[in-house]
Image 1 (tube, rainbow, N blue to C red):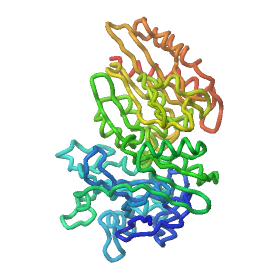
Image 2 (image 1 turned 120 degrees about the vertical axis):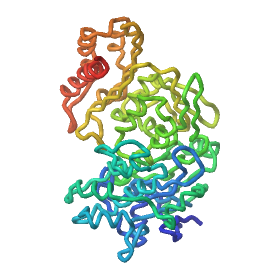
Image 3 (image 1 turned 180 degrees about the horizontal axis):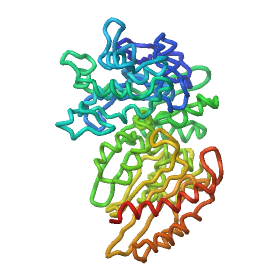
Image 4 (image 1 turned 60 degrees about the vertical axis):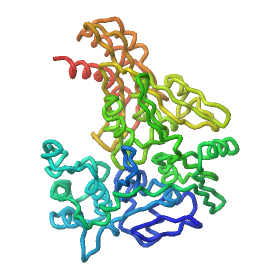
Length: 476
C-alpha cells in the first residue's frame, strides 16, 4: 500500500505507472488547479506545496513549493501535499488567494494556482519577518518580509507582474488558528521505502544506501533520480521510460553536511535550497551560483549530485565547483573513491562514474580563495539556462595573483578548467594590463559552438569580458 496525503485526504498510488508525474496524478484525482504549461519546470503553473524537513536540518516541517510536473508521483509516497484547492475555497479564500483577487493578480487564471502555491510557501516561511526585524525592503523584498524570489519560477502570460507583486507585498502573517501554519510545529512526514510496479516498470526508493548500491550493481541500466529536474524533462518531452527508477533523494547517507578546518562536505542529495541554507555564506562562490540557478521551485528539488551526475556542459554547479578545487566521492557496493572534479568529466554528458556508483558527497577544501565570483550569461537574470558560465577563485596577495582557478561551462562538450588563463594570471600583478592579457587568453579557451542560445563568437567574447568584469567589480 502506498499513498499520498493530498489536502488532508489519502490518495492511493497503487497501480500508478512509475513515469507518471505528480501533476498528472493530481489532475486525475480531480484537482485541476495545477496546470501543465511547459512540462519542464520553467513556468510554475504546476506548483504545489509539500511538507518537508526544514532546510536548516531541524526536525520541524516546512512548506516547500515544487514543480509537480517534474516530480514522479511515486516519489511523494507517504508525503503531504497541498494544492491551490487545499489552501482555500470560493467561499473562504486563503489570504494569498484573497490578495491576488482584490489586487487584480489574475486575468486568464491559467497560471494563478501555481502562483498561489509558490506564494503560499513563502507566506508560511517560518523566518519571514517584517522589514523592521529583517532589514529594509527593496525591489525584491516587501515591508512584510515577502521575498519575490519565491515566485521567480512562475511565469505570467497576460496579467503582468505589478499586481502580483502588490498582492505579495500586501500579505500579513498566518493567524493563530491557521492549520497549515500550525503543521510547521511538528515533524515532517517520514519517507518510507517504496516499491511500486506497474506497466512492467518499477519505482524503488531503497531503505538504505547499501540496498541502493546493490540494486545498481544488479541493474546497471536503472535510472537514478533525486530531484528529477532533469529526468522529469526527459519523461515529459522526449517520452523516455525506464524499466527501473531508483530514487536516492532521501537516503540519509547522501544528505549529510559537515564543516571542518580542512573541508566542507556536502551530501549529494541535499537540495540546492538546503545547501545554501546550511552553508550560511561559508562558500560565497557557491551561494552566488545557487542564487542564479534556475528558480526557487527548481532549487527546492535539484541537487548537486544530480547536476554533476547528468554531466551537462551547461550545468551551473560545475564551473563554480571546479574553481573551488572540489572533489566528488563515488561509492559502489564494493568501494568508495574520491576523485577531483577536474578529472571527473570525460566528454559530453560522460564522466568517470560507473553505472554501479553513486555520487555520495561533494567535498570543497578549505580555506577558499579570497577573491571569488560567479558570472552567468543568460537571456534572463533568473529561471534561465546559461549561455556561458564562469567561476573564479583567485588568491591575490601584495598585488600579485598567487593562485588562480577558473571553471567554465557552455564553451566545450563538458565543463572545463581554464588552464591557460590560470597560467597567464599566476605570478603576475593584479593590474588592468594583466587582466587584458588574460582576457585574450580566456576568450580562446574551450571549443564553443553556435546554437539557439548564443553564437560561438558571442560566447568567446563573453569569456573575455567576464574577467574584465571581475577586475572592475573588485578594483576601486
